Image (cartoon, rainbow, N blue to C red; front, top):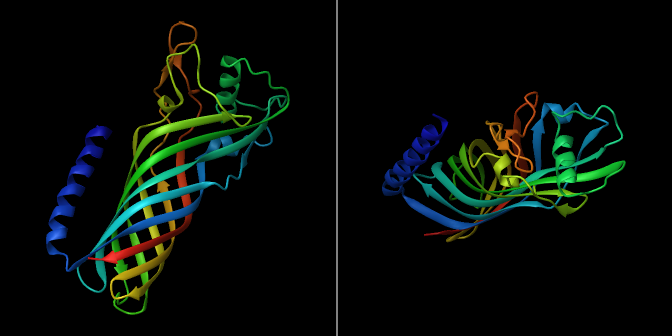
Amino acid sequence: MKQNLKLSVMVLALVCVSAIKSNAQNMELGLRYEPEFSVLMNSNDKNASPALEYTSHFTYFNLGVGTVFNFNKNVGLAIDVLFSREGQAFSGNFNDTNSSKATYASVVRTQAYLNNLVITGDYVALAELNFIKLPIMLSLTTDNTNPIFLTLQVGPQINFLYNVAQEVNHTDEAYPNTNITPIDLYKSITIDGVAALGLGFNITPHMVFTAQFRYDYGFEDIENKNVMVSYYGAPATHFYSSDRQATHTATYGLLIGLNIKL
């Protein structure tokens, strides 16, 4: 049912884009770049302190291209195609008896066991997800022919997951002697909501620079709670604990754009 809904959203988006393009007064095409902060929000992980702690990670980013179909000086449709590297860093301690099977510490423990890693005491871990993102946003502005104008963009975003890396103590680890890889633990397509607020600058009659505070939030659980794993050929069992709650993605940062008016 969810897959049919997502397919319907994508088809409807393409139909809308085709119709809107034919009615737009003008079009802008350009580049996008956003240094961003990212988090995988899960209540089990949040409440696991001090056995498991969220840790800041400052090297994530959005990068891609975008277009804006302007219907008039104030209303348009903005569509981006973005490569987004995001995720969550953790620190923990296996000596803490409060460590729960419902937290990300269980993932680290499983990888350590399968890769013959001996971890006593403190460790660090990283779940890194790489997406192709397709935000489709209503674009509202003050008069966009002025030298400086306000911008607001809001709408849905379709995320296509294409790669996952999971680090333990700064080394990528997989799941040897099982039937799964890190990407199997997450859903391949999810839906977000996105909003961006900022300023536009008409540098020349044919070039526009924008700077926007951008936030997106994943409405769905990004983790594939139905994934089954077989260890060393044994009967398959659920990878995630039945007590693990939904995990939602979120990113925020400063999105820089440079558009050419066509």
